[in-house]
Length: 215
Image (cartoon, rainbow, N blue to C red; front, side, top):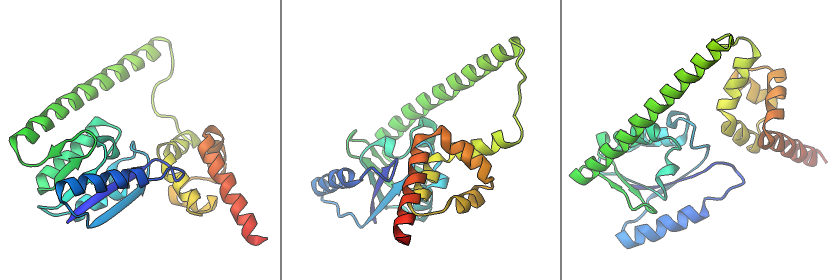
């Protein structure tokens, strides 16, 4: 089975261009796309929380996954490497149309995966080093380190799932339903929404359409 995976960050974006590009690529390769998977989610969201994670779980050896760009899989190299490794382990052929990458069981693909893995490892080390330096600087300045308690951590849950919150709002979910889903209070959500214009816009848009329906 050949699957075209399309991802956009917000519901205001359209995946039509990605679909057209994959169709042209498939035609050149004489491949027929059997199924399209469209996802509205930030590339920074872990694949396990996206359709992509469930998709990879259902794919089998010999299946093909086509994306327009490697960044459609994720925005972080470490996550991209994890996805590529999952594809190689399961025998899934992965194409990226713009970069022209082909990831399969050939030596060239393994070399390319090694290069990506090396860069990802360097990225992890740099992040770790910057984090340690920042913590050491804060400690030297007398700042109290450690995780804050209370609503701050609850707000961080919403922050890390901001794209999912926007998607839920655009799909008609109420604020109460979203609060139940993430286990936060309405007060926490109220503070969170004021920090992100896209969330506030989605809330106002949802409220407008609900009011229009009542009329």
